[in-house]
Image (cartoon, rainbow, N blue to C red; front, side, top):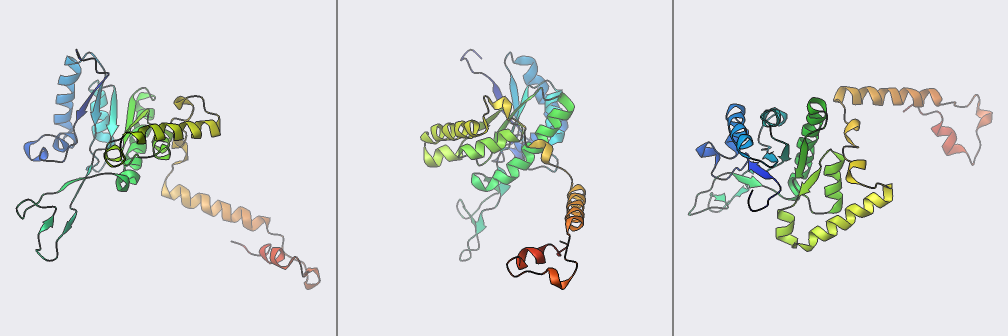
Length: 249
C-alpha cells in the first residue's frame, strides 16, 4: 500500500506448482480455505482487494460468492486452463518436458477466450443478482484487440487485463486496443463504459427457451404464408417469391 498501488489482486488460481502445495488453484477450488484467506487479506488491507478465480472448476460462481461474501471488492477471471500440450510420438514423452518429464500447465491466449467469456458471463450474472451489480469484475483471457475487450465489457466487466497479447505483440497493442474500443463507442454513441457494460447479459437464456423461441418463430412464419389459390396465379417473374410463400419453414 505504501508503494501507491490501487488494488490487490490475490491469485487463487495459479496452476503451476502451487496446487500440489494447497496454494494457487487449489485454494480457488476449496471454498472453505478460500473464505479463510480472503478474510485475512480483507481485514489487513486498506485498499480494494480482488480474487483472481480459476476456471478449473465446475461452477465458478461458488468460489466467487465466497470471496465476495468475505468482504472482497471484486473478482478477476479467468486464469489459465490446466492442459497437456501434447505427446512426442518418437520419444513417447509429454511436451514440453524437463529431462523427459512434464506436468499439466496453464493454457492461455486466444484459444481460451470463449471459455473466459462463459465464466465471466456467469460471474457477472451472479454479481447482478446477489450484489445488485455493486462489485467489480475484471475480464481476462485472450484479450488482444478492442473487439475482445469490448466483448468482455458487454458481458459485465468493468476492466480487462492483457498478458500473453503484450508478450507476443508488445505494448503498442494496448494503444490499438483502446483506439478500437473508442471506435466501437463512437459507432453506438456510447459516452462511457457504463453505457454498455453488461448490455449483452439479458440475451442469454436456457436451451429449453431457445427451442421454444425457434418453434414460435416457425409458427409465426408459417401463419404468414399466403400461398396461391390456383395455378392461374403463377407468374413467370414472381416464381421464386411465390414458391417461397408456400414453404412452411
